[in-house]
Length: 396
Image (cartoon, rainbow, N blue to C red):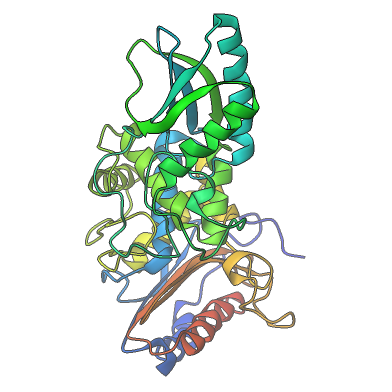
């Protein structure tokens, strides 16, 4: 059983030279390609224990979600919920479904909203309504640069189940090319089942300024959305969180606005953002750049006892051999199984791993290993896992 973190070994010396000797040959593994960079720090002190190109900007793939989620929690707080509303015009003739940017909106939630709308309309004595849907909360391009793609839906302020056309809730899946329209049509069906007469087909339009809200659905709290984003490497939620950050920071809710908002919020956290470029929130864009030092600094901020609102960044990290994108990466009897918590990142030729591990001294270490030029993920991933596992065995 490990001692409580920071209680018995806080002042024990860390053998940085020994750590170098252990990691240096592993970071040079052929499976990691032609360029590798690394940072390992003690989260309690911020001291860098090992670095190789730690300040070199690299394509991070999905490890950029650590930056996205940290920024969102920092500016919005863990209790923030994303609202989807239904607003009725002053004459009660037009009902508008207003998207707030919740990609996890479900059909069940729309049915519940429809029931509340039906109650309001019955009170008004309205015989029928026209249905519109409002997407104005988001601006800019709807399609991610890699779209159409089974890893991400069009990024709109209104969608049901991330625009998936099946019942999955994670991983690649075929996506609709009109998530907002599909959501509105689903709502129309729910309204009719609730006894509301809907005339015509739903159309896109802004809600009237004087419209009154008659139904609201709120997403799960932000801490739960962050954990889901990191555990499952959920691209749709990541992009939504980047836009929620942009809205809170007074930026446009677009790829460009989110880029500025995330960067500015991370600067407030006093982490090294030099060389970083947040082209998107999910890491699917190859124009993204972060440094290993930035990732480890963010993990250290999340571990800071004085910043409990950032803790979901750590609790959402997949557990080696047990959960999320690390569930199948470690054998049951592997040394790192259950000890390593880390965010994975994979694009063609790019592989990364960033997270935390407790060493033999009981210290919480943050690490980030970024590699590019790798030929085969089947070789790169075990090489990254070996680096993280080696950390768990150091410090004795």
